[in-house]
Length: 364
Image (cartoon, rainbow, N blue to C red; front, side, top):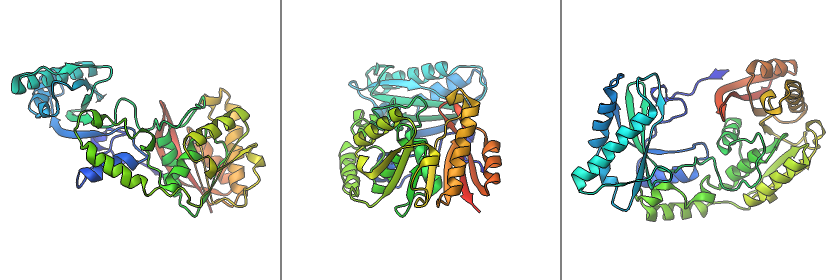
């Protein structure tokens, strides 16, 4: 069953969320494993779709009271992501928004803020979607939270931690499950699975890097309290069983090194073997994988064999659910049908710049 994820203003990849208070927001920022970045929304404004939009953007930013978030010691930079067709560029939007911030501080508070585009203390997000301006300030920073800071070995076709978590979320992973990743590469899926099951938060390895800690938009004291409370609930001794296998000694060694850095190497059982040779198929309950595609392997034939082997192993195993990423939904569905496997769900996602399908397969 193909599904579409609802998006605000048709802005694919964005979600609007509201929180009861600052503590709830901070907890989600620290623990949620599915998001890359977060912006504190200051306002949504309707703007013209012609060149007059630039003046309207300037006015909206100038009147947004954004000067209250700055001081002479805090540098800022303006960014713009633009969706739709407009007679102006993203760079122009950022320039007008930046000029409005400078003028608001100069006229209303009597100082000129420092502009630092490379690594500012405060990032103003002036995103334009069709005839809307979404004005906010960045909370995470320049790098998205999918950079977990435990990765010391990178697979040439590695998977983002956020996508690995999407696979595990759709699979419905729980403590009672026995998970197997048959093509583990650098270990992203089993490592993120271990973190989910023991309750280790997504921001654990970079808790001091969040951008709001440099500009005091949110309380650093409350952040320290929240992170300590969450960390105290990590169940390092949780009884979990995760298997990870790969036929490449190089990638498997890299996965083990990553798991060690991620503090879960003792939670994952690693095997150097081909998919078809894995010895514990009769004990697993779930499978999750990011199989090689033709575009990643440089060989469509090898990619086709890889997906066939993975599906045969699922059919032969005791697992009831298999989630995977693949660019060709029809091929997955066709091969699965031959083995009596049902397509349960399919979601369109992006793996880097490549549009792929997140697929959930189940046995009839």
